[in-house]
Image 1 (cartoon, rainbow, N blue to C red):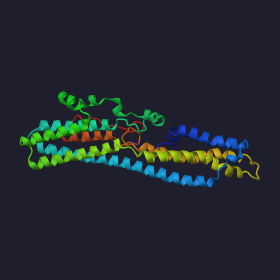
Image 2: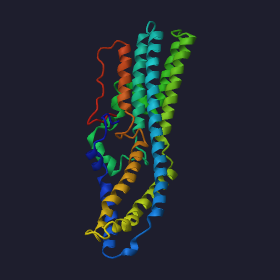
Image 3: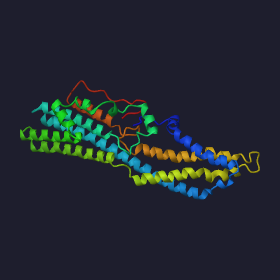
Image 4: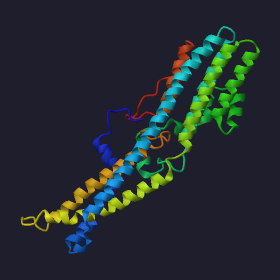
Length: 334
């Protein structure tokens, strides 16, 4: 997540510079040929304007859908924050007097669940963008914690060696950690350490965690529909190619009867570039937000949120050696 006031103008230009090069070339070629006498290259601007209207609608639709996915992902982790705090004090107050060791163990297992979940959500998918040159280059400005460490090393801080090996042998580690929590609760209930109401209350929290995990996995594993994504790309490409042809004659007319007659056609290059860059960049911005767990600067900061939850829960147990908060690097925090 970008934590600054805004992306800088130069930052935006550098991020889109490869598209600027291509768009400039696409504008310059028809302009040069028209200037050399290929007047038949002119295309009426009216149908291109109609195409631009269609492209604007579909790019806007994509950006709206991208923002909806991003905002839903943030709501999911907002729910995890609140439910974790509730789980912490309910569990502490219900079990601390009877089995403080189990409380500590279940707190640690919850931190392990948060860790396993964020590692699963950071796993790459074929449709994500972080492997493209544009996004990969920008990612060098910040660190993705899940790429700098291994899940096994992180879980060692929370689980016993026996449980660690058991969890690592499973495919969905986060699910199995939550299943272990449920088993621990059942054992406490059978021993009489929890009454019916307390057992029901804490189990409801586990159900909420499972629900939030499933929602996050749905966003992670179901991409923005490829049919909508593909048609947006194709229509945008057609529009970008035709814009310079539609403006040739209009700019050529600007110089009629003046000392610039015959030369104003070159204005076609910067103005075509400006129009096509706006549309292409809007599409790129939507693409940058459509996968909110991939590790981009527009992602939900799940690592920071997980650390915040751990700090809050450790504070509930009056621990003094709290882990440090995760701070932004170059205005980016993940």
